[in-house]
Amino acid sequence: MKPGIHPDYRPIVFRDRAADFAFLTRSTATSEKTVEWTDGRTYPVIDVEISSASHPFYTGTARVVDTAGRVERFQRRYQRKR
Image 1 (spheres, rainbow, N blue to C red):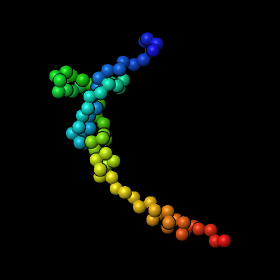
Image 2: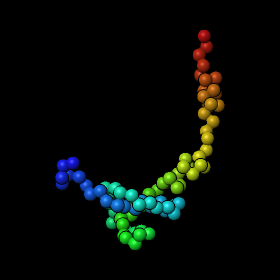
Image 3: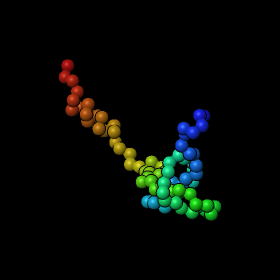
Image 4: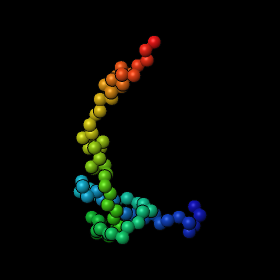
């Protein structure tokens, strides 16, 4: 990589307050807020609206929509008369 043109890639904590879930990863994102992690070090923290801990797809609370019934109803309503 060309030196001096890329942002710093450093450890950062992403925190989902709704699910009380946080994870430490590396990113180029920045934040003024900090949090003390379990290893005793202080890292920048970014609060996110939704994560794998609170998203319905990952938690198994997703609703299944009856698309087959909708498609059949659409075809009945708008089918071509030959």
